[in-house]
Length: 381
Image (cartoon, rainbow, N blue to C red; front, side, top):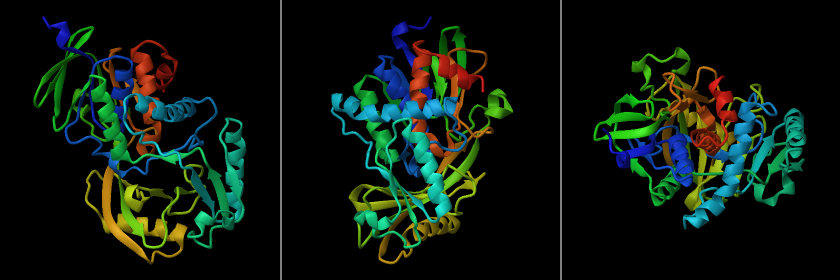
């Protein structure tokens, strides 16, 4: 018989931004969690993410759809993060600096105007820029940029910094994190308890959550083919300008809104110490972190698109990470093995950072039985 004092409320397999966010939300609700990560926290998609936090519509978002509800919920959670972290005496990792979304022609400008009209009804502020000279801080941009839209309520997080701050919060709230520890197997002890076997421990938990990103560790359990995740490698570079400091994120006005936008869609995002994140590329089916020239070239083209010239930039480093893409193209939130307390959460692809806290809130609400509606909508998709 298992001693109840040794049983975690929830064990989470996977220490990327989704797993860590789930642990954070559950710990805030006084559930004791253990996160098991085979490498270091955030070593997958998290470390390649631009980290853009935006309440705008993206892809196939429709008003009141589950995806739209998740996005709005997540943005709401990011706005609350500063107060939550202040209580824990942790610096807030969310930088609400705004984003300038560019338009290279009248068609893109009209796309942004339509987007602004829709989102203004949801309380999202925006400022139309028909001439980039309206904003002196943007005089470094390419002269080919027609104008754009400034969204002051958007912002960004640095993925690894975000995960690191969540780790500090989780441990302050009494939950545990086990890095460099590999999941090996699990057994259902009874209806309420699972045994989780790792390379270093045997854990017992009332609930088990697999937030394993692009790593298909559940294949050996003969799960549905629909739950197999496709890896997509992303590469980005860090540079420093010798002439200006990036005031806020620069993004393509059509990025996430249409498949007919420019070939090199990506972001310029501020980082600490005056660094600029440029990326990220997409390499479908690649599951390695090798830095390739193709990916670096993509980042350089993104830079040239926004800046016109890439002279007077210091190259700092190049990095990569593996994004998890689901078969259906949207996040997967599912019960596994006909069990109400074994869950699978993955497939956030390029939106993991943005959707992290919303996803975590959905899982927390389900496990605490406070609101199961949105969880059930995803579970049935």
